[in-house]
Image 1 (cartoon, one colour):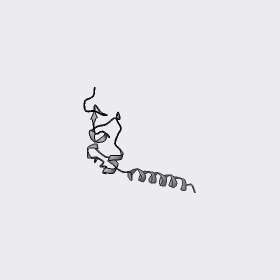
Image 2 (cartoon, one colour):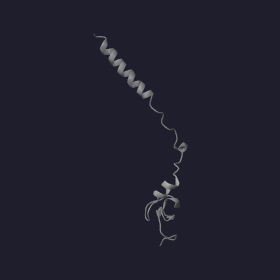
Image 3 (tube, one colour):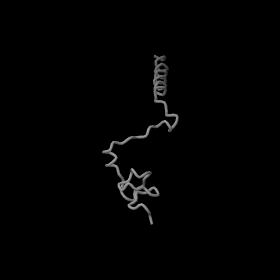
Image 4 (cartoon, helix red, strand yellow):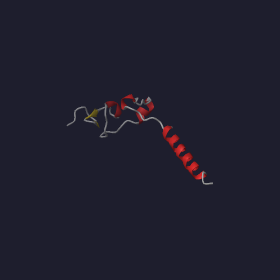
Length: 77
């Protein structure tokens, strides 16, 4: 009976070690990440209102992104 306890501990350690080696490999660089493409439906649903933050014109409901904000007019006063 005394040999069962070390055997059980060894078995648990081996199982945990197997879990570590079975984990997915982390991505090396973010440059390989593919940009997400949206269908026209989701692009239309996800348009942002005036005043919301944006990166380019295609994100805004007015199609005008100025100074990283959705704008109503081309020239901001």
